[in-house]
Image (cartoon, rainbow, N blue to C red; front, top):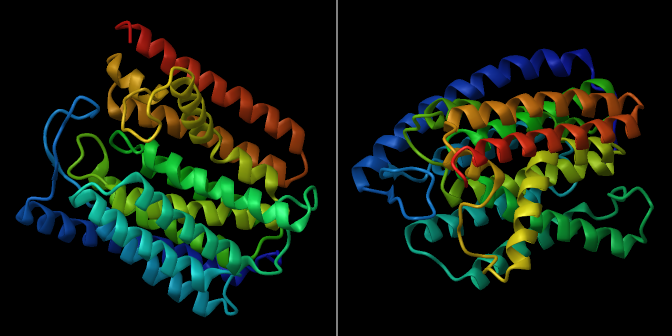
Length: 343
């Protein structure tokens, strides 16, 4: 990706841009919320839901355009754009369009997966001859195939994990905040760092409306393209040599989603069906509030950001071990909360 030390001017421009985008996202979300209420685009509770009354779904219709426009501006300012950017952004918009249709009337898992696979293939193709994601540990072809698999899994796990108020906004702030912190300490390409900061700003403005008690949900139109864009940023960081940080920052989401998937697979449950079996969902069923769970994720995320910064400063294996310990502690805490009601 071509990492460089980011100049002081970069940060002087990025900080006010962050605040501006957060305010714009807040205002656009308010407008979209009014439209969703008017047209009756509600998510109805069912036995797999973690909420107990209908709420508007489609907050991604506010967040995604803000992200797209600000990313376009950032990559025009930092020209040339990050490798693959001009394929990744249209692919994210395609995912958003298909996911909105899925929000309105459920599409087949095969079609959803096919579109996600196409988006990931476009993103991998856009990487071209940029540095290898796995830093030469795999041959080039296997490097790209492994990156595609992980990216596709991350898109789906991010969607799976978007099940309570505030959690996806918090996780986005953790991942993006960590990438910005790493960019301040180690050579990284300026484009992805700016994109991470602007993505965090857009989700911060949305999070005000999505915090418990939430006024609206992201919906698949938000969570699917968001997972796709975050996956691209993490792969970009890994290609710039910060593979440990790229693994540490999403470690909680990776662990919760993967362990839950394996548990369901072991007993033969349909892996594509919605459920309430994630650690964080069981904590809510055990009586914890959505805000309480999201704040625990944020606290763990703060530790992960510090550890990612430590990895960028050269303490790679210590940071990886600390991240594993922090995530295990959080999962154990959620399991403890679930046991209060025998969940």
